[in-house]
Length: 222
Image 1 (cartoon, rainbow, N blue to C red):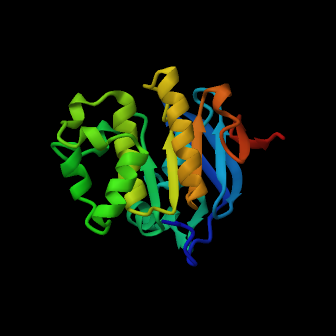
Image 2 (tube, rainbow, N blue to C red):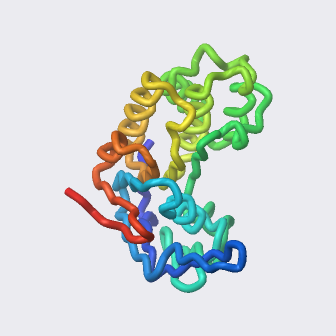
C-alpha cells in the first residue's frame, strides 16, 4: 500500500516569518525560515523546549498562518488554505496524546470509520500494529502505546502520504518507544513521508535526515 502517488511533490517552506506577542512583548519565532522535504523522506527535527517545534507543526498543518512566507505541500498553499488545505494535501497529524483524535467507542468502531480500506487491509494493519486482539476494547482502556498505534493505524489505512508527529513518545515507556520506532520505519518503507519532531536527543537519528531547530533556525548535522 504505497503512499508515494504521482501528485506527491513534498513540502516546501519559503521564507517564513512568525512572531508572538506575550505580555506586550514581541518574540520572534521564525525569521526567514526555509525548508524542503522531498517525497519519501523521513526527517527528524530535534529541538529543546520553546525552540519553535510546535509552531512549525502548526504552520505545516495549517493551524496557524505565518506573518509572511508560504507553506506548500503537494502543490497546495497550506499557509493560505489552512487545515482543510493540509488535509487535501494528504497531511496526517499524530499529536502527543492521540486520545483526542480517537472518536470510536471501541477499536473496531474507530477502524470502521475508514470506509475506503478493505477488510484485508485492515486485518493486515491491525496485525502490523499489534492490535488484532484489542478490537472490542474501548480506547480509554488502551495503554498510551496502544493509543499511539491505533491512531497511526488509522492514518496508514487512510493512505496519508505525509505524516507529522508531534513528540510521539512523550507518554511511552522504553519498550513502547522502541516499538514505535520500528513501526515508523515500516510505514516509511511503504512510501510515507514522515516529519518527526522531538526534544529527545536519542531520537534524533530515527530519520534518514536530521535537522536541529536552534533559535528559530534549522541546522543540518551529518
